[in-house]
Image (cartoon, rainbow, N blue to C red; front, side):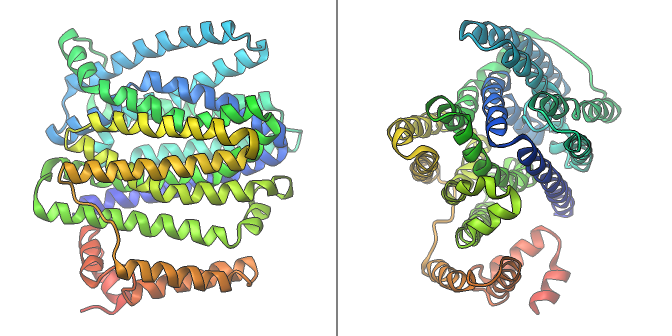
Length: 480
């Protein structure tokens, strides 16, 4: 349990610091670039991100599962790297052929190619470099990749600050957005070789096995990134780059929250794989769902009652229209948090075929809703499409998890009462100035934890034990 705690602290601290630095960087870039140029950047990034998932091919989760279950299996890891390199080359050729056929402007082609480099060297793409970090995940040594990720974000922040004084252009921002990841990529290769003796290897029998195992996830991963990015591409083509910039600002407030379920899952995944099926771990899984619901609901409700001041504080008055889609996208995160953990559990239980079905359903629902709502409701319609499809997807996964006999949290009378109390309390607290509002909300959250208005006594004890924090938690909550 101490390993889980240390790894979770490394992940949570690293992800939080990286998120904070990256968030400030994007805010500065959005203000300097202006709404239209920021929308252009978001749309180009969306195209490359969708293409990047062809390279992903669902290899990461399968490799993580195998290394977690069997410790380090060099042959599997080395062959995954070799397969990734082949896929990168093929996809680069396909991307350039496609954008030429679609008659992209020469400047857009060049910027797409520059952004394509991020598939290899950046952790932001969760792709090639993410696979390089999997041995550290499986051995619970995430302090190394997290430290390197922080370095990436610091370099980009410095770059944006310096160029902001001289007028930040889209071209120079994209160049810095990519090259700031290069030193970290080199450091990760160095530590990978030092700790695990990294090298390339290609064996056809292993490659064949990897491809067959990853096929259901390859479709799932590609569809999920289409789900995440298609609305941005559609808004650009239907409504224009200005409205893309407005919606992208809203998405930048909601999408980074995915690091929360990701951090939790990475920390606990190796133990789920090793102990799946045991009753006590089934109870832990249900508690994990409850934790994610608690966090996602609080983010959504806190922002809802103070959306305009939050937008003014972050992106500035030019982006005030982002308030409504941001509210809707944050509520969709409640369902996406559930689905994130649920889909990873299906991988751990070797039932990843359902992930592909889930992805087909939510992408189809999202695209259909977007085509209906976007022409009439613009970026608000895109947010509503994301909310509706995420709710539908969570219902489907709840059904599948029950079918696979995997425990999950669905709420009870006590939780519903807590939700009503928080909604009423925050409604009245929203009359306060923003900073005072945040302070009082934090006090309210502590009170709900201290008096077990959401988590039961036994759940607080179990969480404390899992994180090896009994001493501090017992003191704070005055528990025996």
